[in-house]
Amino acid sequence: MIVRILGEGQLQVDDSAATELNSLDAVLERAVNSGDEAAFRSALVALLDRVRALGTPLAAEVLEPSDSILPRADADLDEVRSMLTDEGYIPG
Amino acid sequence: MSVMKRVSLIFKSKANKALDRMEDPRETLDYSYQRQLEMLTQVRRGVADVATSRKRVELQMKSLQQNQNKLEGQAKQALGAGREDLAREALSRRGALQSQLTDLENQYHSLQADEEKLTVASQRLQAKVEAFRMQKETIKATYTAAEAQSRIGEAVSGISEEMGDVGMAVQRAQDKTAQMQARAGAIDELMASGALDDVTGPPRDDIQAELDSMRSGPDIELELQRLRGELGTGSTQAIEGAAAGSDGAAQPAAAGSDGAAQPAAAEQPQAGDGA
Image (cartoon, rainbow over all chains, first blue to last red; front, side):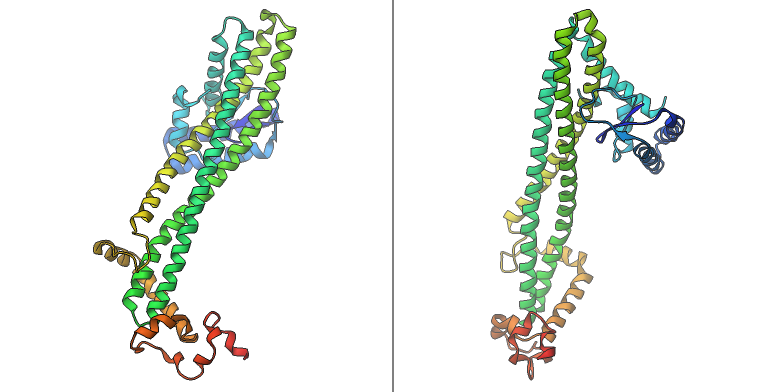
């Protein structure tokens, strides 16, 4: 599967990693919902680190859409919230 | 639903809107390509804006550093001449500049990081736009409108995602640059107003001076001690002009026996050891 980390680009990640990434994603989701900034930060960092460790960067000229998209590493809680709710946040 | 899926769905719905807009899907290709070229221009402009902002901060840092060195020199001179009050004032002004300098240094590094990220993003987008252009020509030449649909969908949503990503990065960089420009403007104004001038400049308002000395009080005591130490081990050379005007009462012990014989030692207190 292809995962994009916003601000960094796309990575090819083996499908076998899906379970692990999904559980990290679930932790992130709980942190976003609870509004706990510290928990959110560590969950986001953990997920992004794992994606970077498992993934291989996709060549720049590849035009495939990603299966999953993740917030950039220094995004704050409010930004991620508005990204999840407000379509107007993403230009293009 | 998970964060990963929700974010990607939002991107997909953007891409689908772009696809739905045109009657003939092949028109979508041209429309999307136009948008891509516009986005490329926008990203390059973003990189240039950030670079300009970074250079401005760099100039301000240099100017603040020069100002600090000047004030340090003046403090030394004042202390040598027995004018501790003036030395205090100079050091207090120097201290006030330090927090601004630290702030500018942080801004500088942040802008530098943004510039690098945007440059990489613009190169990546350029590679994708070129790939898209070639694919667009192939699709238009090879397929009928009906056949082209799915291939177009893939190419367009792939690049539309990239554009959304880059678009956010540019937007963020521009917002940040605008904020920093405003702060840089404030420092320029402060410099122009004379508030950051040397001790010989026009007097500042007393309350501000009082506040500054309260804020940086302990540091100034340390600084004064350090300068006294430097003067004590060095010669009277460093304070030549100023000392001439005073009563000489403030001269520490170093001015006594052999100090005057080594004028060069002023810059390097330890240089006299081997002589």
